[in-house]
Amino acid sequence: MTNPCIICVAITGSLPTKTNNPAVPITVSEQVESTHEAFEAGATIVHAHVRNDDETPSSDQEKFAALKDGIEKHCPGMIIQFSTGGRSGAGQTRGGMLPLRPDMASLSVGSNNFPTRVYENPPDLVHWLASEMLTYGVKPEIEAFDLSHILKAKEMADKGQLAGTPYIQFVMGVKNAMPVDRDVFDYYIHTVRRLFGDDAPWCAAGIGANQLTLNEWAIAAGGHARTGLEDNVRLNRDTLASSNAALVRRAVDICDKNNRPVATWQEARRILGLPVPKAATIGRAA
Ligand SMILES: [Zn+2]
Image 1 (cartoon, rainbow, N blue to C red):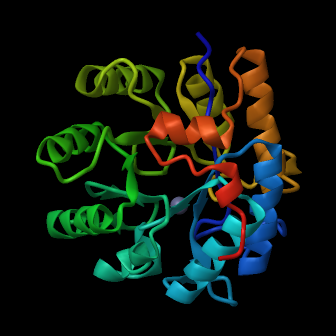
Image 2 (image 1 turned 90 degrees about the horizontal axis):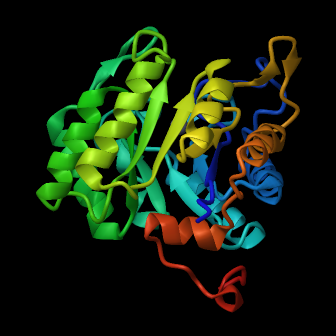
């Protein structure tokens, strides 16, 4: 049995700027172009934030809508995931784009420290974001910055606050949060399997130079992989990544070494329990 690997590309994020790497896409048109290149290289999920023209994080629904339209037009079938992370605003503005009905959205279910601040995810906000995702048919990706977040996802799934089997993303290597630790990583996998079953899909993301380590660990262990300029702007210590696609190609190479086929968008949608539109009905301007 082959187990295709879903590659998620986190194209922009809320922190890196063109000063860090000129390839970071900031405008919506740059984001669509960068996503298209990454899709052609093998990515089937795009994780996206939007930015203001001065590169600061934005919650602008019109930008999210334009990005969604552009990706649907140029990357038919690709899974669109919007971030509800905390940097673009506080409270419910973080979920303001959910009525646009992206395929997925990130959901943090607990709080933790970030490099210079607390990443605040109070229970009432978490439950509101989850209920909005249920209302608009948006599949959450649970961002597990800590073991407790995986167990919280199980509790929420049991209460009907999350639809289907949660897709858990292990996030490691954020300063002041969970470091890159192989025993913890293995225990995360063990916990996902115990709570959600052996076939439950999971993914892993590493920050900075840890991106490569987490790609290697996740792909070898049968998980899915996240890459992209949001998490890391370098190919190695001395070289900036030339594009999001360059980082996707690096993940594809790791899949090849591990005999993991790279998931097509149809396979990725099936693995995640998302609808699979017929090729003939997508990619057309409505
Ligand atoms: Zn993000």
